[in-house]
Structure formats: C-alpha cells, structure tokens
Length: 265
Image (cartoon, rainbow, N blue to C red; front, side):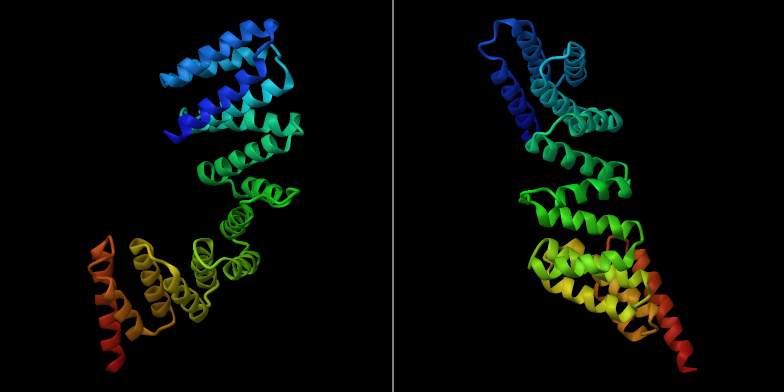
C-alpha cells in the first residue's frame, strides 16, 4: 500500500508539470493511462506506456521522473533488477537535481546490496550518499550499509573500525547491530574472547527474541572454539527450547558432554 502511494505521488508530480501546456496533451493522456494501469496493478502495461513516452524525448524533468517510476516498478513489482538499474543509472548520468540523484542512488544501493549482493557496487552507491553535500538525514544508515559492504567483502579490519564508530554514535538500532557485526568480525578473525565480549554488549541492547537466541548460539560457538567447554555447554543448554533447529543444539550438547568426559579420563 505504501509503495503504491509513492508511485501515485510521483505520477501526480509529473502531471503537475504538464498542467496548462496544450502541446503536451497527448503526453498528459499517456501518463494518465500509465496511472490507470498502476491503480489496477497492471505493471507490465504501465511500463510499456512509460517506455513509449521516453522514446518521444519529453522534457528532461519528465524523463527523470519517468525513469525513477520505471526503476521502482521494475524493482518492486516486476523483479527485473537489470532494467531497474538501467533507468536509475540514467538519472544519475543525466540529472544534476540533488533530490533525484539521492533517490536514484538509494534505490541503486538497495538493489545492489539486497538483490544482487554486489557489495562492491553497493559500496560505491553508499559512499556517494555519505559524501552528499549537504549531509543527508539517513547518514547513519548509509554508513552502516557501507560497513556491511566492507564486512561482506571480508575487509574485516576496515569494517571493524567502521562498526566501532557506529556503536559509539548510536545507542539503539544501528548501534546494537554494530556490536553484533563486531562480534562476527572478531569471530572470523578467530579472536574468540573479543567476539564474545561484543556479543554480550549486543545482548544488553537487543530486544528481538530471534536475534537474542542467534547471538547466544554464536557465543556458545565461540566458547566452544576457545575450548571453554563448560561455558559453551551452559549457553547451548539455555536456548535448547528456543533455537529454531533443536537437533543442532542436541548434537552440540552431546558432543560437548563427550569431550568433557574425555578430558577427565
């Protein structure tokens, strides 16, 4: 519903630009036709109308808004992310309007990060948004996504520095998530004690049960990797009725029990 409202709002902006211009009456009718298709959720028909309008080379302002509409429809409703990127990147290359540059870059970053998992390209998009002048309101979100890109690209030293900065700036939300990823970073670097410390900091801030259970599982895993078998056993045992795959916990507990018994022999 919210996405549909956004599409209709963008259409309204386009129509406002055309009001009072007799020579654009045909264009006006075609945009109304696209709006009708969107209202009926006939998205394939809507993009056909839009693509035809672009071939007629309307004003630069109209082109920008239609390209953005196409980027949203292709990505959100038709799952054609390549075409979405094409139209969004057209805005970046042809427009100097800050608002539309920002809007297009946000969608590009989201598609590259969430759909393609192309973290190199997503990093470029979020870096551009971070460098925007004047600074944008969602600066912390862009910085967090940028840090996640570094993390997924296995640039752990860079992501470690970025997540530490974010954990200090924000008390909740992104700050809590930053502690989670600091723990993962240290875990992948085999710095077990540091990973455990960051995850306990995460637990102090996190309220979602599924996230808490997952963090406890990782803490137990880190204890196990550090050969702290008793601590690992206790943490696994504490989530035995909460972890989504009980068999995994049972197997870990049995394995730890056998290892602890073998130690005493």
